Image (cartoon, rainbow, N blue to C red; front, side, top):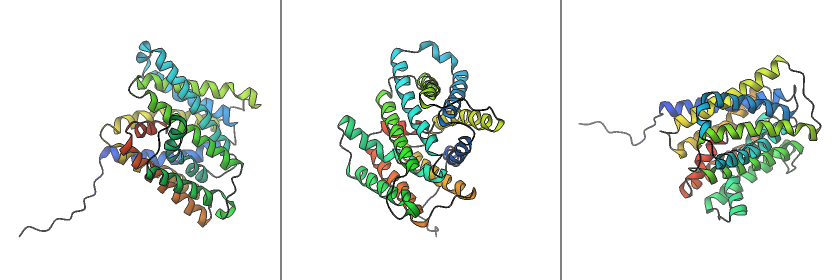
Length: 306
């Protein structure tokens, strides 16, 4: 007699395992950035970080720059502006809120994408996208309030929420030019633009160049190189990993940020943790449904983590 086989099978591809490992390390970057802003202003740190990333990607893909087009320059500059705004505000917000709270609020960029597409492009989100937005904003109410009990967006929460909107705009811009440009060339241009814009914004913002300490250089250059490596690894892994499965894996990023934050001594109240869980659920609901409706957006969202 042939033994009965279970209908449930769990397997993880090597590429998926690598993405899980990357997601875990990426969750720890929020804590690293929070340490960096004790040594530097947010604009200088973001500029230095993306300068290192642009240099690393440029060295690897130097030959591809010879065929750059005006469309790729336009796309790279526009996306780079969104990156500069998003990451500068996110880094600024980390001066006021814990890294774990920042990670969960930043994750709201996923359900915000269909909302921005509706407002800017007239594309009405589906029912599940609306449900995901509602879940995420309900989670924000619990996460943002003092002791997680009331809705009161403080300075850090508001700045970080605006950064999530900028990151969502980045995703939409990437989607708009998907398939029309060379990814490597646009990546170099967008990273270089993000760095240049951040440095240029220092003077109007009244931010001065900090003292170059070993800690600042290690964190900024390390995150820059990591950003370059992570992008190349994600592009390789997602050749055989579906966008849906990749999204589920990437949703673990704020969860890992929360774990690392707790190890470092951060303590979120119980209702705030419940709110964080609602945000993660909203991300999953919104993005999974969105992938069935429009395949370009999920691919672009993977680049937002670069």
